[in-house]
Length: 440
Ligand SMILES: *Cc1c(COP(=O)(O)O)cnc(C)c1O
Image (tube, rainbow, N blue to C red):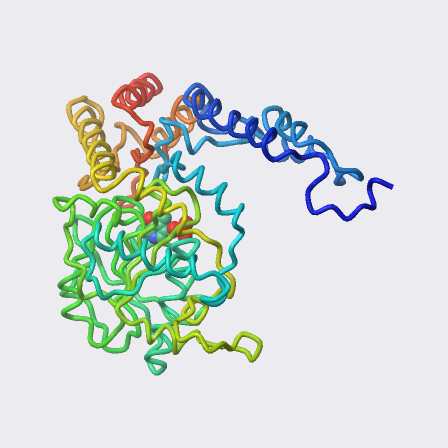
């Protein structure tokens, strides 16, 4: 019986033939992604209603899956690769990252201990040191990759709590990312918010960290991309652990002129390479000046994992035991773009955002609602919150652009974020035209 055969390869897949077809599918998708509706135009349940209730009994061909990708999956995709994806923090899965992802699963490394993949352990060390150099970080900091900023922050706050168990408070602001609230809840720490100034930056003069195990300072807050004054906070931290969340804005430090804050006083720092550094989702970089504190908080080596290798295993300083070979994607991006390629991308995005900001400022009836240090513009149209919300819904329903919103000082505000490598000046102009058309 065919179906009973123990075959290591799926019987219906030919890696070269189907692989070529999959790569061809990927290339043609990326060529035409800008013509698709950015936001998926389906109702909840649309895809579930169309998928079979049970998996197939006998293996199917890979080509039938590729057909379903067009027929079933694409209509339910919100296109993050679209040049007019301008919501949240736009990002890109770049060509080098796409190819590296294929090679990653081909090698299928599981980083548990150094010996289970010396390549993974050492490439992760090297790429994080490279990226640290590009961003101007202290060379002695230890870097590693987590899947998301949320997990990286949870890990850092757990290390901070373990380092000062008698202190149970985390200090931040109302503009701190919700992942910090979530981490504090899980770690049973109390969250205390310091007031912000008119530009949404933490007021260090009002900071009291005497009972805090950690302070979270943000460089590039989620709503407005404001930055807390990290150096001043570091001077007033009262032995608390200073965690800097630069998940979005840290990428901009590739350009020396965009390094606004001196972050050398931080105990830990996160930068999402998956946001503005082209790796695709699931590559959040965490550096620390206190790797031994992470080790004390997380090291647990059972008998079956003891070895005589005298190297630090990343599983001793983080939550997961096994880690994927994420560094390969980052390595591919850093090599194929180089410092100058990354700088050119970031500078272009900042230029485009500045241009959009100028258009909004120059147009009667429109208002810019927060300073714009990088590639995100907060703005609104004259009228009530309800009218702006209705405008927001109309704009996104066009499928031509996708933006997000926030609330600042109680007011409903629109938010346009530039961060996709395919975005051109024509796309930003297109976005502005859609906004003006929908506002009329
Ligand atoms: C995006 C973002 C996060 C959360 O990132 P995930 O990787 O999705 O967990 C946290 N903080 C800031 C400042 C962010 O911009």
